[in-house]
Every structure is written in structure tokens, then in C-alpha cells.
Length: 502
Image 1 (cartoon, rainbow, N blue to C red):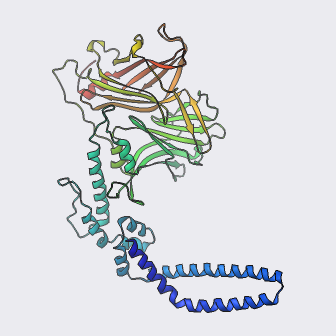
Image 2 (image 1 turned 90 degrees about the horizontal axis):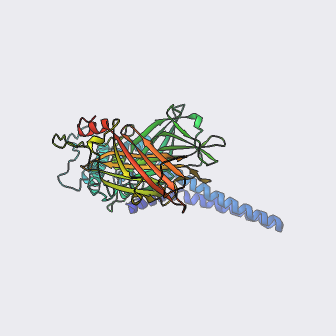
Image 3 (image 1 turned 120 degrees about the horizontal axis):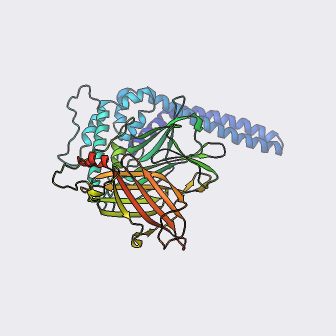
């Protein structure tokens, strides 16, 4: 393909320059003689200046020739008939055709011709026999370019479904989420909508992967002023065309999937101003979203989005530009025999972390609660007992939120990110949480006689339940999780398992 392109460029060059080469050579010779005669009649200083002038003139002539040659090449390409251009376009790859369609209206029409795209559509067949395929039987009126793109997206999604079948033995989530998102060439975008309905798009600055979640950060050199922002849109873009080894083709077209839309300066926006960082004020407009504002000037410092891995690959692939994909919920079957149905067999993974580094993670299995202990509309599971020292475990890092921009960095105290994944007895996700939470210092708490240091509390609640973690600082300057209590609302359990607890 590159050899064809080089031959074509060489042909155009010879055709455009052959007629003008002789006349331009004569003009350059006469001009050189005039400058040489002036040089001989002047002084040495004047001769030096004339030599510099001659060099500049030659340089100017060379640039002029290049500009003229490029103009002639452009004119020749414009004068070529449609049939010749279609022959040339037929030698190009799909991604090159898409680039040509952006040159001008004529090329856009020709590069989208069905004669070019129908053979490509037939060539890109599904690799797995027996898999459903998008079949286009009506040739008249079929837009084969659109059909080709649909087939490529279908091939990509079919291949990835096979990769998602393998489960991680620790988290119970798809084991290859990190590598799949990277192989897709996934780009994460935040789009700021201003009050004039103009859109300002920014690509991700940093992406970090964790056991059950992903955190994306944006800190470009300059955002638009916060007082002009109307809302935020978060989107993921994945490549459509891939090489044989599975890597995305350079300059491949990309399909956008909507992830989240949130308004700005809504009444429910939570503000965190009690941290010890002197540079930032933080806003939490939605679970998983952090908006950092400079105290000096009030401009945007960075944006952070934390997403749970459950269904994340599907959300990045199967959504469209305006609406988010909703993963299908597989509810368990009704059971009239088990009197404790929906109260046992849970598995829970809890992680406390920073934006890039983990601080603490534990996995709890065979969680249960007797029916008799349902109280106040909640089913309570004690994961770590306060009075059982063998249950207590140490944090590997202090709970805080290190941050950075292109020019500055710091640490926001008393804030971390909480990840919770709760599976029912059928290994289906019942509850997933990924959000920033405050680490509040407790003045007086119920501690054992072993610990005498400061005590902290991490709390989160939503429509399905709440979780509370107690953390204590011991004499060796370690931080220990001494209590972890998970409470689910009875109505959430009844809705999921079709039970009637009260």
C-alpha cells in the first residue's frame, strides 16, 4: 500500500515539475549573474553583504518552488476524474479512507462510495463460526460504510465477550478488565457544558486500576471558569479497527459511549472544606466524582472519576454517544423452602484506598444474619468484631488523598475512596460502591483496653444500605481497622430475592 502511494506521489511530482524546470533554471542563472557582477564592483564589506543576500534569495526561491509544486499537486488531484480517484481510494486501508473523507466534500462523497466499502464489509467476517452476524441483504440503498463499521464493532464485541468469561478468584469480577480496556485503546473524556451550551472536551491525564475499580483524573493546563460551567459529561472512547495481533490500528475510528452526566452547582452537591490542605476546596457532586477548586481564585484544579469494575467494559463498549448502557441484572429465583433465603451466603470485598495506591483490602465469605436479628428495617452483618483482636488488621498507608496537577501537588487529609462489592449466594453482584468518603475523627468511642490512640470513622450509605468502619491509631503509630459493620435494607433484600421480611 505504501509503495502504491509513493509511486503515485512520484508520478504527480514529475508531471508538475517537468514543464517548469527549464524556465526556472534560466531565471536562476540570469539572477545569479547579475548578483555576481554587482559583487565584483563592490568593496569587501559590500561583497560580504551581497553574499548573504544571494543566500537569502536562493532560500526564498527554494521555498517558492516548494509552495508552487504543492499547489500544482493539489490542482492535479482536483482535476482527476472521479473514476481515477476511486481507483486510488480502492488501494487504501479503511482508516485511510476515513481520513480522506475529511479532506473536502468531494472526497467525502467519493470515499464513502459503496463500491469501496462493500468488498471491505465482505472481508471482515466474524472469526467464530455460528456467531450471530448483522446481515445486509438489500443491496440497493444499503450504506456499506455504515454496515462495515457495524460489523467491525460486532467483531470486536464478540471477541471481548470470550475474554470476559474468566473470573478473578479474589474479586469474582472479570479477570481481564484492566488489559481489555488497555487493548481497546480506551480514552476517557470529560466534556464541560458551559452556560452558552458550548462543549469543552478534555482527554484523561492519568488512569489507575485497582482490585474492583478504576480511577480517572483530568488536570489539563487550563479549564474553563467554574462559574461558566453548567454540567459535566463523562464518556469513554474505544477503537473499532484492530491489527491481527489484537492491538488497535493507529488512527482507527473510535466509538463513544456515554458514562455519566451530572449538573454543576446543584443543591445536593456536597462540599468538603475541613481538610488540612491549604490549596484546595473539594466538591462531591455525585458518588465517585471529585471536583477540586483552588482556594486562591476559585478555578478548577482537577477532576476525578472513580468507577466500579462490575459491567465497566460493557459500559465502555455498548453505550452510545447520548445514553449510558445499563448492565442486565440477573435476579435469583424465588425460593419458598429456605426460611433464611436472602440472609446468608454473601461474599463481600471492601477496599480503602487513595486515588492511585491501596491502603487496606479484605474479603469476607459466608456472611449471614439470623432472621431473628432483623431490626429497624435493616439486616446487619458484622464483618470485623470490635472485641476480637484477631479480626483487626493494619492499614498499609494512611487514609488521605494525594493529588497533583501539571504544576502542583499536595495531600488532602481525612479523605479516601471506599470500594465495596457484595455478591449474593449465587455469585451475582447485589451491591457495588465506589466513592470518596470522609475519615472523621471520633472524640470518644467504644475501644478495647488494648488501644488508647485516636479513633476515626468511615461511613457510607445509599438506598440499599450502609457500611461503617472504625479505625484506631495504636501506640506504634499504626492504623488498624477494629470494626466493620455492613447493614442492608430489608426492602432491598425483598426486592432482590422476592422475599417478604419485615
